Image (cartoon, rainbow, N blue to C red; front, side):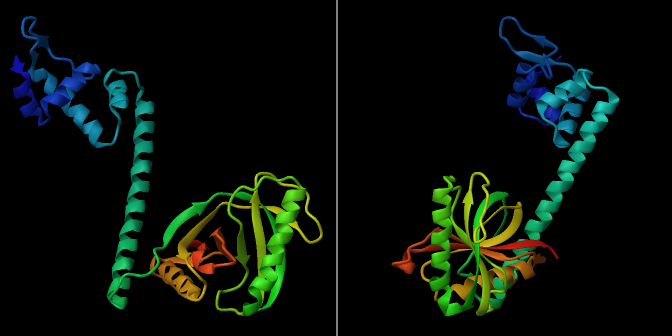
Length: 272
């Protein structure tokens, strides 16, 4: 018989771990001293402990390991578990490789600019949503408020009259590159909980789930082009490409004081 401390050293685990395995029925001691309550193990139990540790190293939960050791799984079920764990681990490796690429891109950016960027770009998935939209053409960029604000008012009026429930921040979709300053085609959009019937001027449709590279700007729009530049540089450095019209999400919109506004710019992307 081997005392619990010695058995723990042989198996290179802690005494606390062995006690936990005992409590959940994964590895019971060979004997427990009735007077002292001290646990004893046998050398013959080392293979079971090693199998527990091996399966744990593969990423299985203790509950799953218990099912394997207690023969509650068939060979096909065990193969299925291993195949699923293989796929999960492969996915994690791909994610970490992408993280390494993003770190390398950030390092290159800092080395080139000798400073941290004003904007932090993140990759995220925007869920599908129902939207009410008014599509407009803006002659020149300096006329954006003159055309976009009335378009939003028209959409909000429609949403109110249709008794729709607003489901998020309103935003604009711009159907050309940010550097285009004439003949800009844009949509004033309000997300809603459910679809209704549109009109000749108002469109109602579902925007699909979209992966985007995004960054947030707080303040007025004088330096807004720097935000677009930061996102586009991030997209190129991280081996993505633009995959659709970009969005401006007006998280906090104060037309009386743009310095108090917060806007998120989202570029739909896909791997290059």
